[in-house]
Image 1 (cartoon, helix red, strand yellow):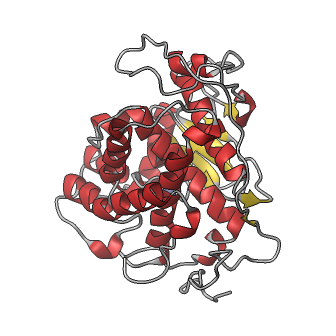
Image 2 (cartoon, rainbow, N blue to C red; image 1 turned 135 degrees about the vertical axis):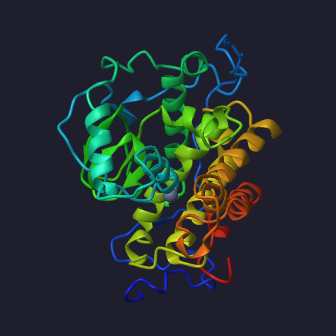
Amino acid sequence: MSEAGTNPPLPADQPQLPYPLSEGHAGFLDGEEVRGTSPVAPTSDLRGYHPGVFRKRARLDPSQIEDRRGRSLGRGVAVGGGGIGVVVALLLVILNLSGGGSGSTSVEETLRDLAGVTVGSGSTRSDLSHCRTGADAEKSEDCRIVAFVNSIQSYWQGQIRGYRESPTVFFTGATTTACGRATTEVGPFYCPADASVYIDLGFFQELTDRFGAAGGPLAQAYVLAHEYGHHVQDLLGILDQIGNDREGPQSAGVRSELQADCFAGVWTANAVETGYLARITDQDIADALSAAAAVGDDRIQREFQGHVNRETWTHGSSADRQHWFQTGFRSGDPRDCDTFHGSI
Ligand SMILES: [Zn+2]
């Protein structure tokens, strides 16, 4: 185990386990069977949604989602880690809106203010028990997310010895996590302290409207699969080893983010085999790649601060994020997601 986090894991010469696992951490399984369900008939009249993504009769497990939408909270500061990578951009936007960040307003205060505005403005609480089958996933976004989460976790269940299911928490405005109070503005993220993925589904609209991604269901799946990639890293003991080496294009932080992108690609390659998805099309892959590019550090910096500063990168460039997603997708094997060796 490396010390001080500057030398993250991963000797490349272990044929069976790609990562040196900490005591008590999980490891990859070999050739595990994945569950399957019956084939499909596409049905959907959702606008902008191309039917046929899900197997109609796949059984969904909505208990993997905790729905906190519309719950009110007190004031708080956004804290989170391991997100998809938009917090910098959003902070910049917020600072621009509040006068370019000049004066005495700190980022934290800005966030606190913003949380104060957004908290409690959410809709009424909803219940996901109607998300029973793939057919339901074809009809509603909530159920679609349930299906993606089910598929992602089903895949990793078959790959990782000792895999522990991790819930996705839907929230609006702000919510409490074991990593601190989080607001919508931090974007989706994984909190290791409570092993949960947090997302305000409004982010998907932001991803297309503000960050310029093409959209589509697989863009959503990419975001979720990236966050579950962090959960996998958590189980494997990789997250523990990042330490403070979090900024710069070759940093351990960026390498861990690119690995999460690679894991997202690996899931995508195996998504149909989980029994939840009916097919992955070229358009789906294009949508996922578009989303990956949209949250690249260089693109976000160019868009929102007008210049690129590689030394402050936390998630990697658009090209690198696409490259590692594709690496995972082409291989379909998480062992090929070694982002910790060599030059990025
Ligand atoms: Zn991330």
